[in-house]
Image (cartoon, rainbow, N blue to C red; front, side):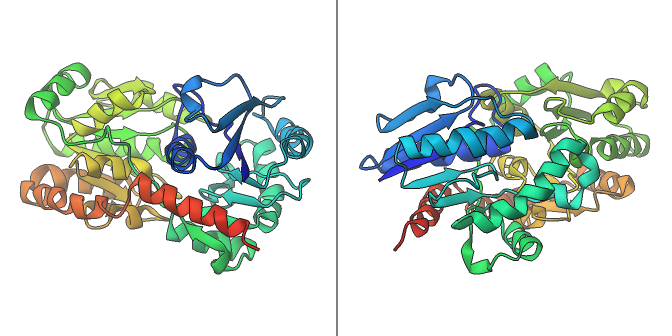
Length: 375
């Protein structure tokens, strides 16, 4: 069988949620199924590290699809021609987009419908494109995979898709995420937090990640508790981050917040592994991979009580109302003061982590793909 795959988010040094899902599942799938041929469609020159096995043929498809007009050209003009050229039996798209102009059965991965819940967080051109085309994509797909039970229900209710046509394929955490030794933790604290304990946040910085309320909560925490505790924020400035920049410049205790930018997994795993706790008060997530990454490091989490995050956190995290900085600060203070509570959350982490792994994700995605071509 010849399987075409949308791999345009496999970008060296820039992998985030969807990119990690794509790389971790596809690397396993192509190696486990050498009897099949895979055509990887990139929208720019690709890195050889993403050509995972000899049964992968990489193809660069123009134009680079990073704007709604270019999305349309890439998916509705360029892609259908190449699907015909390579005689694809199945098309897998892991980023929520597909081609309405092909008859090739499509397995579509939709990670979340954040733009439906928080449209104000997105630029107008992208928002209009997604709200028009995403329902069409969902109904066109032969089968849909999504990353949480919450998202399965959300997609079904918003777009009228039968639940039986949606498979839950959880995310996993990279094997680099592991508990650190005491010496390793001390080294990380020295490099990133002036040798002090720290809370950590990891993720691209845009309004849905709720960084302003996290910063407000940290200020409240510092005013309540005399401590050298720092806040380390890992992630690139993505979009609509002006309010974050303004608060970064004017907030009390601004020198206690360390902004370290985007990190590759080898270093990010150390920064998360060295933390006192992860604080992930996002407004909305289809999954929330950093929560799982922290738990895999035996680092407890403070996570939002909304969308999929309670599903991922289980009983290894404290849940907060992400719209309430006071609640976030209270949980930070509670975790700081109550070592027995922190120890209990750490003890609960392995059982929660065991529910999620990339091999299981790859197997479930493959099963979803095969259902698309069943006669």
